[in-house]
Image (cartoon, rainbow, N blue to C red; front, side, top):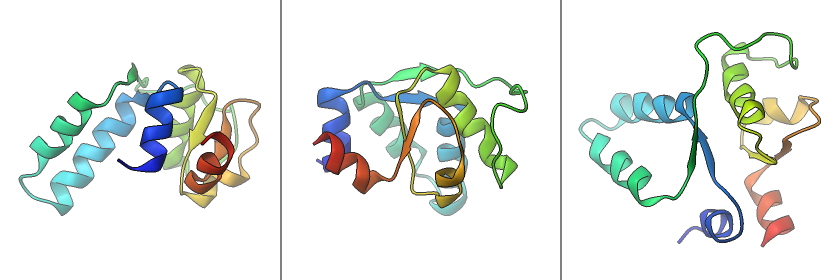
Length: 112
């Protein structure tokens, strides 16, 4: 099992937002035709808490270069996540008190 996922599900609480799940399904449908079932199987096997992302997130909680990324971090904030794991470097410039924004490798180093 992937080290990061193993670390998350054995010692933490995985939080996924409806925004992220919908984005995952959209990308999968676009790039990997007929693979929806694989994503649904994965989601059915993972223990996670679901956070409903609002259609119109409250603006101005933080500044981010790509406003398309705003709902992603916004959902983590309203979901009360402690850590936000991402490989998108745009998030590393964002200033928020919580969640702590970390690269996957940094998460593994700190929490494994």
